[in-house]
Amino acid sequence: MIDILMPRLSDTMEEGVIVAWRKKPGEAVEIGDVLVEIETDKATMEHEAYEAGTLHEILLPEGETVRIGTVIARIDDGREPLAGTPPRDGTSQGKPPAPATSEPPIPESGSAPATDPAPTEGGAATSPPARRPLATPLVRRLARDNAIDLNEIIGSGPGGRIIRADLDRALARSPGATGHSVPAASGGATTPNGGVPTGATSVPFDTTRQVISRRLTESSSSVPHFSVTAVADVEELLALRARINAELDDAGQGKVSLNDLIVRASAVALREHPGVNASYSEEGRGATLLHEHVNIGIAVASDHGLVVPVIADADRMAVSRIAAESRRLVGLAKDRKLSGADMTGGTFTISNLGMYQVESFTAIINPPEGAILAVGAALPEPAAVEGAVAVRHRIRCTLSADHRIIDGALAARFLSTLTSLLEHPLRIIA
Image (cartoon, rainbow, N blue to C red):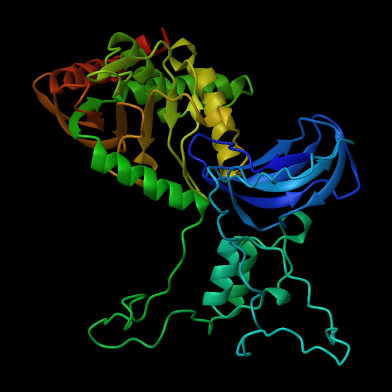
Protein backbone atom coordinates (compact mmCIF):
# COMPACT_ATOMS: atom_id res chain seq x y z
CA MET A 1 0.00 0.00 0.00
CA ILE A 2 1.09 3.55 -0.73
CA ASP A 3 -0.03 6.34 1.61
CA ILE A 4 -1.09 9.58 -0.11
CA LEU A 5 -0.22 12.46 2.21
CA MET A 6 -1.57 16.00 2.24
CA PRO A 7 1.23 17.73 0.29
CA ARG A 8 2.88 21.08 0.90
CA LEU A 9 1.89 23.04 -2.22
CA SER A 10 3.20 26.47 -1.20
CA ASP A 11 5.96 27.80 1.01
CA THR A 12 3.45 29.13 3.58
CA MET A 13 0.99 26.23 3.51
CA GLU A 14 0.26 24.53 6.83
CA GLU A 15 -3.04 22.84 5.98
CA GLY A 16 -5.26 22.36 2.95
CA VAL A 17 -8.91 21.78 2.10
CA ILE A 18 -9.83 18.78 -0.04
CA VAL A 19 -11.90 20.35 -2.81
CA ALA A 20 -12.67 17.39 -5.06
CA TRP A 21 -11.47 13.81 -5.50
CA ARG A 22 -10.75 13.15 -9.18
CA LYS A 23 -10.40 9.37 -8.68
CA LYS A 24 -12.75 6.94 -6.96
CA PRO A 25 -11.88 3.83 -4.94
CA GLY A 26 -11.31 0.91 -7.28
CA GLU A 27 -10.16 3.06 -10.22
CA ALA A 28 -6.75 2.54 -11.78
CA VAL A 29 -4.16 5.24 -11.13
CA GLU A 30 -1.25 5.96 -13.46
CA ILE A 31 1.76 8.15 -12.72
CA GLY A 32 0.77 11.74 -13.51
CA ASP A 33 -2.97 11.21 -13.04
CA VAL A 34 -4.67 13.95 -11.03
CA LEU A 35 -5.87 12.43 -7.76
CA VAL A 36 -7.36 15.38 -5.93
CA GLU A 37 -7.88 19.15 -6.01
CA ILE A 38 -6.58 20.91 -2.91
CA GLU A 39 -7.31 24.44 -1.75
CA THR A 40 -4.26 26.04 -0.11
CA ASP A 41 -3.79 29.44 1.48
CA LYS A 42 -3.12 30.89 -1.98
CA ALA A 43 -4.81 28.85 -4.69
CA THR A 44 -6.66 25.68 -5.64
CA MET A 45 -4.17 23.21 -7.08
CA GLU A 46 -4.20 19.72 -8.58
CA HIS A 47 -2.19 16.97 -6.88
CA GLU A 48 -0.88 14.21 -9.15
CA ALA A 49 -0.01 10.60 -8.44
CA TYR A 50 3.70 9.76 -8.30
CA GLU A 51 3.17 5.98 -8.27
CA ALA A 52 0.79 3.69 -10.12
CA GLY A 53 -1.77 1.25 -8.76
CA THR A 54 -5.44 1.18 -7.78
CA LEU A 55 -7.03 3.73 -5.48
CA HIS A 56 -7.76 1.54 -2.47
CA GLU A 57 -9.55 3.97 -0.16
CA ILE A 58 -10.23 7.65 0.47
CA LEU A 59 -9.69 8.44 4.14
CA LEU A 60 -10.88 12.06 4.23
CA PRO A 61 -13.87 13.46 2.34
CA GLU A 62 -14.26 16.56 0.20
CA GLY A 63 -14.56 19.74 2.25
CA GLU A 64 -12.25 18.48 5.00
CA THR A 65 -9.43 20.70 6.31
CA VAL A 66 -6.26 18.61 6.72
CA ARG A 67 -2.79 19.37 8.06
CA ILE A 68 0.27 18.74 5.89
CA GLY A 69 1.58 15.18 6.12
CA THR A 70 -1.72 13.57 7.09
CA VAL A 71 -2.69 10.43 5.14
CA ILE A 72 -5.72 11.29 2.97
CA ALA A 73 -5.91 8.17 0.76
CA ARG A 74 -4.16 4.90 -0.05
CA ILE A 75 -3.15 3.36 -3.37
CA ASP A 76 -2.85 -0.42 -3.71
CA ASP A 77 0.35 -1.13 -5.62
CA GLY A 78 0.14 -4.87 -5.04
CA ARG A 79 2.49 -4.83 -2.07
CA GLU A 80 0.85 -5.12 1.36
CA PRO A 81 2.49 -3.27 4.29
CA LEU A 82 4.48 -5.33 6.78
CA ALA A 83 2.49 -6.55 9.78
CA GLY A 84 2.76 -4.22 12.73
CA THR A 85 3.80 -1.22 10.64
CA PRO A 86 2.03 1.82 12.11
CA PRO A 87 0.12 4.01 9.65
CA ARG A 88 1.65 7.30 8.65
CA ASP A 89 -0.58 10.13 9.87
CA GLY A 90 1.64 13.17 9.66
CA THR A 91 2.67 12.96 13.35
CA SER A 92 6.18 12.52 14.66
CA GLN A 93 7.99 11.29 17.76
CA GLY A 94 5.03 9.22 18.86
CA LYS A 95 2.70 12.19 19.24
CA PRO A 96 -0.99 11.44 18.69
CA PRO A 97 -2.59 12.76 15.51
CA ALA A 98 -4.40 16.09 15.64
CA PRO A 99 -8.16 15.82 16.17
CA ALA A 100 -10.32 15.87 13.06
CA THR A 101 -11.57 19.25 12.01
CA SER A 102 -14.85 18.05 10.54
CA GLU A 103 -18.00 19.66 11.89
CA PRO A 104 -21.45 18.16 12.52
CA PRO A 105 -24.09 18.61 9.82
CA ILE A 106 -25.89 21.93 9.91
CA PRO A 107 -29.44 21.48 11.36
CA GLU A 108 -32.42 23.07 9.67
CA SER A 109 -33.18 26.61 10.76
CA GLY A 110 -34.97 26.61 14.10
CA SER A 111 -34.67 22.86 14.62
CA ALA A 112 -33.14 21.11 17.57
CA PRO A 113 -29.55 19.82 17.30
CA ALA A 114 -29.24 16.62 15.34
CA THR A 115 -29.15 13.42 17.40
CA ASP A 116 -28.19 9.86 16.53
CA PRO A 117 -31.08 7.81 15.10
CA ALA A 118 -32.83 5.63 17.67
CA PRO A 119 -31.88 1.94 17.39
CA THR A 120 -34.48 -0.75 16.83
CA GLU A 121 -34.82 -3.82 19.00
CA GLY A 122 -32.22 -5.51 16.83
CA GLY A 123 -29.79 -2.63 17.45
CA ALA A 124 -29.98 -1.19 13.90
CA ALA A 125 -30.79 2.44 13.17
CA THR A 126 -34.34 3.12 12.07
CA SER A 127 -33.13 5.17 9.06
CA PRO A 128 -29.78 5.87 7.39
CA PRO A 129 -28.22 9.30 8.08
CA ALA A 130 -28.76 12.00 5.46
CA ARG A 131 -25.88 12.66 3.04
CA ARG A 132 -23.76 15.58 4.22
CA PRO A 133 -23.67 18.47 1.74
CA LEU A 134 -20.24 19.15 0.22
CA ALA A 135 -18.89 22.47 1.50
CA THR A 136 -15.72 23.99 2.91
CA PRO A 137 -15.44 24.49 6.68
CA LEU A 138 -15.73 28.27 6.16
CA VAL A 139 -19.03 27.87 4.30
CA ARG A 140 -20.30 25.53 7.02
CA ARG A 141 -19.47 28.00 9.78
CA LEU A 142 -21.06 30.91 7.91
CA ALA A 143 -24.16 28.82 7.23
CA ARG A 144 -24.44 27.91 10.91
CA ASP A 145 -23.89 31.52 12.02
CA ASN A 146 -26.63 32.74 9.67
CA ALA A 147 -29.11 29.89 10.21
CA ILE A 148 -28.84 28.68 6.60
CA ASP A 149 -29.65 25.02 5.82
CA LEU A 150 -26.99 23.76 3.39
CA ASN A 151 -29.30 20.94 2.32
CA GLU A 152 -31.47 23.56 0.60
CA ILE A 153 -28.58 25.03 -1.46
CA ILE A 154 -27.48 23.69 -4.84
CA GLY A 155 -23.69 23.92 -5.05
CA SER A 156 -22.02 25.36 -8.14
CA GLY A 157 -18.50 24.17 -7.26
CA PRO A 158 -16.71 20.99 -8.39
CA GLY A 159 -18.86 17.91 -7.83
CA GLY A 160 -21.76 20.04 -6.59
CA ARG A 161 -19.66 21.56 -3.78
CA ILE A 162 -21.25 24.58 -2.09
CA ILE A 163 -18.93 27.57 -2.39
CA ARG A 164 -18.97 31.03 -0.80
CA ALA A 165 -20.83 32.57 -3.76
CA ASP A 166 -23.66 30.05 -3.36
CA LEU A 167 -23.98 30.95 0.31
CA ASP A 168 -23.93 34.68 -0.46
CA ARG A 169 -26.84 34.20 -2.84
CA ALA A 170 -28.74 32.29 -0.17
CA LEU A 171 -28.07 35.06 2.35
CA ALA A 172 -29.33 37.65 -0.13
CA ARG A 173 -32.60 35.69 -0.40
CA SER A 174 -32.88 35.50 3.41
CA PRO A 175 -32.57 39.06 4.74
CA GLY A 176 -33.93 37.95 8.10
CA ALA A 177 -31.00 35.66 8.80
CA THR A 178 -28.75 37.50 11.19
CA GLY A 179 -26.43 34.81 12.57
CA HIS A 180 -24.62 36.30 15.57
CA SER A 181 -26.30 39.67 15.05
CA VAL A 182 -28.89 40.67 17.65
CA PRO A 183 -30.91 43.85 18.10
CA ALA A 184 -28.56 46.69 18.87
CA ALA A 185 -28.27 47.86 22.45
CA SER A 186 -26.88 51.13 23.71
CA GLY A 187 -23.23 51.18 24.61
CA GLY A 188 -22.20 48.40 22.19
CA ALA A 189 -21.62 45.94 25.02
CA THR A 190 -19.93 42.64 24.21
CA THR A 191 -21.36 39.22 25.00
CA PRO A 192 -20.90 37.93 28.56
CA ASN A 193 -18.07 35.61 27.48
CA GLY A 194 -16.19 38.44 25.79
CA GLY A 195 -17.00 37.12 22.31
CA VAL A 196 -18.90 38.77 19.46
CA PRO A 197 -20.03 42.34 20.26
CA THR A 198 -23.73 43.15 20.22
CA GLY A 199 -24.89 43.99 16.72
CA ALA A 200 -21.90 42.34 15.01
CA THR A 201 -21.54 39.23 12.86
CA SER A 202 -18.52 36.95 13.19
CA VAL A 203 -16.94 35.94 9.86
CA PRO A 204 -14.29 33.26 10.53
CA PHE A 205 -10.96 33.46 8.70
CA ASP A 206 -10.50 31.16 5.73
CA THR A 207 -7.09 29.57 5.08
CA THR A 208 -5.82 32.51 3.03
CA ARG A 209 -6.76 35.11 5.63
CA GLN A 210 -5.21 32.99 8.41
CA VAL A 211 -1.85 32.96 6.61
CA ILE A 212 -2.04 36.68 5.78
CA SER A 213 -2.75 37.45 9.43
CA ARG A 214 0.10 35.30 10.70
CA ARG A 215 2.75 36.38 8.19
CA LEU A 216 2.06 40.11 8.39
CA THR A 217 1.90 40.01 12.18
CA GLU A 218 5.29 38.31 12.23
CA SER A 219 6.71 40.79 9.73
CA SER A 220 5.50 43.91 11.53
CA SER A 221 6.60 42.63 14.93
CA SER A 222 9.96 41.04 14.04
CA VAL A 223 11.29 43.19 11.17
CA PRO A 224 12.45 46.75 12.02
CA HIS A 225 10.58 48.70 9.33
CA PHE A 226 11.28 52.24 8.21
CA SER A 227 9.77 54.12 5.28
CA VAL A 228 10.81 56.87 2.89
CA THR A 229 8.61 58.61 0.30
CA ALA A 230 9.45 60.36 -2.95
CA VAL A 231 7.29 62.15 -5.53
CA ALA A 232 7.73 61.70 -9.28
CA ASP A 233 6.34 63.82 -12.12
CA VAL A 234 4.82 61.23 -14.47
CA GLU A 235 3.41 63.52 -17.15
CA GLU A 236 5.87 62.21 -19.76
CA LEU A 237 5.38 58.63 -18.56
CA LEU A 238 1.62 58.84 -19.11
CA ALA A 239 2.15 60.32 -22.57
CA LEU A 240 4.60 57.55 -23.48
CA ARG A 241 2.18 54.91 -22.23
CA ALA A 242 -0.57 56.38 -24.41
CA ARG A 243 1.69 56.18 -27.50
CA ILE A 244 2.77 52.61 -26.71
CA ASN A 245 -0.82 51.47 -26.22
CA ALA A 246 -1.97 53.12 -29.44
CA GLU A 247 0.61 51.09 -31.37
CA LEU A 248 -0.17 47.90 -29.45
CA ASP A 249 -3.87 48.42 -30.12
CA ASP A 250 -3.23 48.78 -33.85
CA ALA A 251 -1.27 45.52 -33.72
CA GLY A 252 -4.06 43.77 -31.82
CA GLN A 253 -1.89 43.23 -28.73
CA GLY A 254 -2.66 43.74 -25.06
CA LYS A 255 -2.10 47.14 -23.53
CA VAL A 256 0.54 48.23 -21.03
CA SER A 257 -0.61 49.51 -17.64
CA LEU A 258 1.02 52.19 -15.55
CA ASN A 259 1.93 49.49 -13.05
CA ASP A 260 3.77 47.52 -15.76
CA LEU A 261 5.98 50.55 -16.38
CA ILE A 262 6.55 50.94 -12.63
CA VAL A 263 7.54 47.25 -12.38
CA ARG A 264 10.05 47.72 -15.18
CA ALA A 265 11.43 50.95 -13.66
CA SER A 266 11.74 49.31 -10.23
CA ALA A 267 13.57 46.32 -11.75
CA VAL A 268 16.08 48.63 -13.43
CA ALA A 269 16.56 50.56 -10.16
CA LEU A 270 17.06 47.33 -8.22
CA ARG A 271 19.74 46.25 -10.66
CA GLU A 272 21.52 49.56 -10.01
CA HIS A 273 21.07 49.21 -6.21
CA PRO A 274 21.48 45.49 -5.42
CA GLY A 275 21.48 46.19 -1.69
CA VAL A 276 17.71 46.77 -1.90
CA ASN A 277 17.19 43.53 -3.84
CA ALA A 278 18.22 41.62 -0.73
CA SER A 279 17.10 39.60 2.28
CA TYR A 280 18.21 39.35 5.89
CA SER A 281 19.87 36.13 7.02
CA GLU A 282 20.53 35.01 10.61
CA GLU A 283 23.62 33.13 9.45
CA GLY A 284 26.53 33.69 11.81
CA ARG A 285 26.29 37.18 13.31
CA GLY A 286 23.73 38.17 10.67
CA ALA A 287 24.19 38.63 6.94
CA THR A 288 22.74 40.33 3.87
CA LEU A 289 21.71 38.00 1.05
CA LEU A 290 22.17 39.77 -2.29
CA HIS A 291 19.96 38.13 -4.90
CA GLU A 292 21.29 37.41 -8.37
CA HIS A 293 17.84 37.64 -9.97
CA VAL A 294 15.38 40.52 -9.81
CA ASN A 295 12.04 38.79 -9.19
CA ILE A 296 9.26 41.26 -8.50
CA GLY A 297 6.09 40.26 -6.70
CA ILE A 298 2.90 42.14 -7.55
CA ALA A 299 0.31 42.31 -4.79
CA VAL A 300 -3.09 41.24 -6.17
CA ALA A 301 -6.35 41.68 -4.26
CA SER A 302 -8.73 38.88 -5.26
CA ASP A 303 -12.05 37.71 -3.88
CA HIS A 304 -10.09 35.09 -1.92
CA GLY A 305 -7.66 37.52 -0.27
CA LEU A 306 -4.28 39.07 -1.01
CA VAL A 307 -1.80 37.03 -3.05
CA VAL A 308 1.60 37.96 -4.46
CA PRO A 309 2.50 36.25 -7.75
CA VAL A 310 6.05 36.84 -8.98
CA ILE A 311 7.40 38.18 -12.28
CA ALA A 312 10.79 36.49 -12.55
CA ASP A 313 13.79 38.36 -14.03
CA ALA A 314 11.73 41.50 -14.57
CA ASP A 315 14.90 43.50 -15.26
CA ARG A 316 15.49 41.39 -18.38
CA MET A 317 11.97 41.78 -19.77
CA ALA A 318 10.55 44.31 -22.18
CA VAL A 319 7.57 46.27 -20.87
CA SER A 320 5.19 44.49 -23.24
CA ARG A 321 6.33 41.11 -21.91
CA ILE A 322 5.94 42.30 -18.31
CA ALA A 323 2.41 43.40 -19.21
CA ALA A 324 1.57 39.99 -20.69
CA GLU A 325 3.00 38.12 -17.71
CA SER A 326 1.18 40.43 -15.29
CA ARG A 327 -2.15 39.81 -17.04
CA ARG A 328 -1.55 36.06 -16.91
CA LEU A 329 -0.73 36.07 -13.20
CA VAL A 330 -3.60 38.39 -12.23
CA GLY A 331 -6.04 36.19 -14.17
CA LEU A 332 -4.78 33.06 -12.42
CA ALA A 333 -4.95 34.82 -9.05
CA LYS A 334 -8.58 35.83 -9.52
CA ASP A 335 -9.48 32.26 -10.56
CA ARG A 336 -7.37 30.85 -7.73
CA LYS A 337 -5.32 28.86 -10.20
CA LEU A 338 -1.83 30.09 -9.31
CA SER A 339 0.78 27.36 -8.96
CA GLY A 340 3.45 27.20 -6.29
CA ALA A 341 6.04 28.23 -8.89
CA ASP A 342 4.03 31.38 -9.67
CA MET A 343 4.32 32.58 -6.08
CA THR A 344 7.84 31.70 -4.98
CA GLY A 345 11.25 33.28 -5.43
CA GLY A 346 10.25 36.93 -5.02
CA THR A 347 13.00 39.38 -4.07
CA PHE A 348 10.97 42.63 -3.99
CA THR A 349 7.25 43.45 -3.93
CA ILE A 350 5.17 46.28 -5.41
CA SER A 351 1.77 47.12 -3.94
CA ASN A 352 -0.19 49.60 -6.07
CA LEU A 353 -3.43 51.15 -4.78
CA GLY A 354 -3.51 53.90 -7.37
CA MET A 355 -6.59 52.42 -9.05
CA TYR A 356 -8.48 53.22 -5.85
CA GLN A 357 -7.32 56.86 -5.96
CA VAL A 358 -5.17 56.35 -2.86
CA GLU A 359 -2.61 59.14 -2.74
CA SER A 360 -0.01 57.38 -0.59
CA PHE A 361 0.31 54.60 1.97
CA THR A 362 2.86 52.46 3.78
CA ALA A 363 3.07 48.72 3.10
CA ILE A 364 4.34 45.88 5.31
CA ILE A 365 7.36 43.94 4.04
CA ASN A 366 6.65 40.51 2.58
CA PRO A 367 9.21 38.19 4.27
CA PRO A 368 11.86 37.12 3.51
CA GLU A 369 12.23 40.12 1.18
CA GLY A 370 14.04 43.21 2.41
CA ALA A 371 11.76 45.90 0.98
CA ILE A 372 8.36 46.67 -0.52
CA LEU A 373 7.23 49.62 -2.66
CA ALA A 374 3.81 51.21 -2.05
CA VAL A 375 2.54 53.17 -5.07
CA GLY A 376 -0.26 55.73 -5.02
CA ALA A 377 -2.38 57.26 -7.77
CA ALA A 378 -1.07 59.57 -10.50
CA LEU A 379 -2.98 62.71 -9.52
CA PRO A 380 -3.01 66.15 -11.17
CA GLU A 381 -1.66 68.87 -8.90
CA PRO A 382 0.05 72.25 -9.22
CA ALA A 383 3.82 72.05 -9.57
CA ALA A 384 6.68 74.44 -10.32
CA VAL A 385 7.88 73.93 -13.89
CA GLU A 386 10.67 76.18 -15.21
CA GLY A 387 9.75 78.99 -12.85
CA ALA A 388 6.02 78.82 -13.52
CA VAL A 389 3.13 76.94 -11.94
CA ALA A 390 1.59 74.18 -14.05
CA VAL A 391 -0.76 71.27 -13.42
CA ARG A 392 1.18 68.02 -13.63
CA HIS A 393 0.38 64.39 -12.84
CA ARG A 394 2.52 63.28 -9.92
CA ILE A 395 2.83 59.99 -8.14
CA ARG A 396 4.03 59.15 -4.62
CA CYS A 397 6.17 56.07 -4.01
CA THR A 398 6.88 54.88 -0.46
CA LEU A 399 9.62 52.34 0.16
CA SER A 400 9.37 50.29 3.37
CA ALA A 401 12.68 48.62 4.16
CA ASP A 402 14.25 46.24 6.65
CA HIS A 403 16.60 48.48 8.63
CA ARG A 404 18.83 45.52 9.51
CA ILE A 405 20.14 45.40 5.93
CA ILE A 406 19.01 48.66 4.30
CA ASP A 407 19.99 52.07 5.64
CA GLY A 408 18.14 55.32 5.02
CA ALA A 409 20.76 56.59 2.57
CA LEU A 410 20.51 53.44 0.42
CA ALA A 411 16.72 53.64 0.43
CA ALA A 412 16.92 57.31 -0.60
CA ARG A 413 19.33 56.55 -3.45
CA PHE A 414 17.04 53.80 -4.73
CA LEU A 415 14.04 56.13 -4.71
CA SER A 416 16.07 58.85 -6.42
CA THR A 417 16.93 56.43 -9.23
CA LEU A 418 13.34 55.23 -9.46
CA THR A 419 11.82 58.72 -9.66
CA SER A 420 14.41 59.73 -12.27
CA LEU A 421 13.41 56.73 -14.40
CA LEU A 422 9.72 57.56 -14.05
CA GLU A 423 10.36 61.18 -15.04
CA HIS A 424 12.55 60.17 -18.03
CA PRO A 425 10.58 57.12 -19.25
CA LEU A 426 12.58 56.45 -22.40
CA ARG A 427 15.24 55.01 -20.08
CA ILE A 428 12.65 52.47 -18.88
CA ILE A 429 12.04 50.98 -22.31
CA ALA A 430 15.57 51.45 -23.68
